[in-house]
Image 1 (cartoon, rainbow, N blue to C red):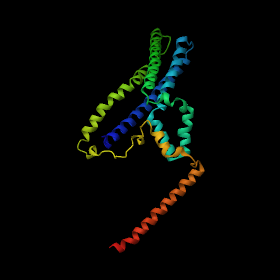
Image 2: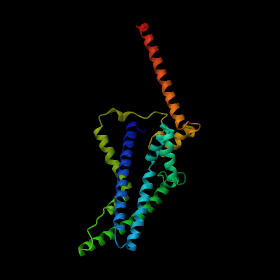
Image 3: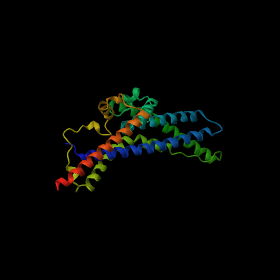
Image 4: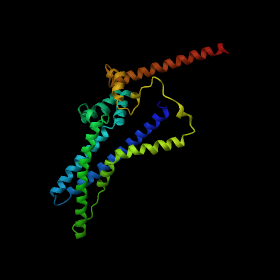
Length: 261
């Protein structure tokens, strides 16, 4: 039987994985755009350079899409919509429309191992080809620098590609020492012995692949939910009702207290 602590640790690991993916995606985008700008500054742009610029663009598009279709990130954006439908229309629905979520979610999400395998074969093929082009550009820069016709240019985009291609096995292997270290430093804590409730449903976890569909069923797909100013007014009135309810409950408790003594 699964334990509460196991799910908490797994959730922490998924958040760490997402943070690292966001950081590495930003690093690759910055490095790739710098490389493209460096090539465009050249007086003469060779056919190999044009091919390199195209492949860098394709690689960055794949990297950005891979980040966008991260299950935890999708669920976090949907969680914003659960808290505020108006904000969710911008953070969840509009962004989904921009990335063709309704058409590509079955292919790009990581809940089908066949699509996952095909997706990573495609990505590795594109990035491996881009890597060879970047290394070739690096060699030409070195030759031109030695001749004295060009100021030294350098990029780490090739290294970033290698690390990115290795992220899946890296995170899979990293789970083992992560859980071992967490178990070692918390071995004296009693939360390891707390089982999950009998009616606990795994779909309600924020990192679960079925989180969005599960919550949509409970929320009736946000049907007849107020949006914009109407939602603000509704939430304000709801907060007032809750405040008044709590005040009346406290008053009843205070009135009953003398008689109980």
